[in-house]
Image 1 (tube, rainbow, N blue to C red):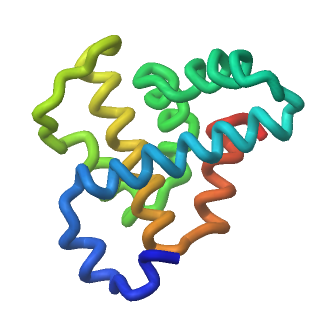
Image 2: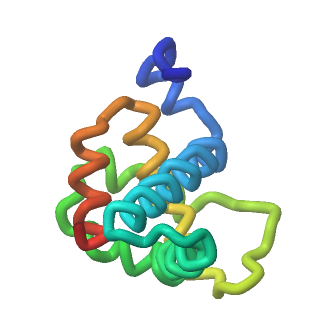
Image 3: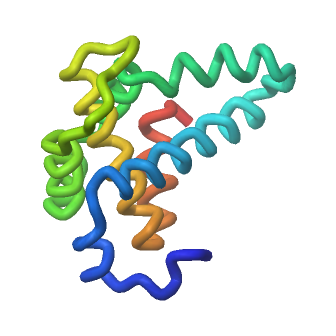
Length: 130
């Protein structure tokens, strides 16, 4: 893994949008794996199905499924993500949904970078109804 030499302090000092960037990729990978396991194999179908999961509104709904079971540390990640100021504007989402989607990506990125893979699998299983 590329993050093997990062300490907790290093992760805490990372720009929040950098953590979200990693989280976005990890979330997308989990969604794609989930779709393949469900038996979706055609590339066009995979893309159409993935888009139903990987958009600001769906990501906000996914975050709301787990918000009550997050630890204090995880809630802090979510709060950092919601408060992040991006220079890009959402294309197909309202600002509130976009900030929650970023919060979800920060949470996923944090857990991934911090090597909390079991917790990440558990939370993503709930979010993706696995």
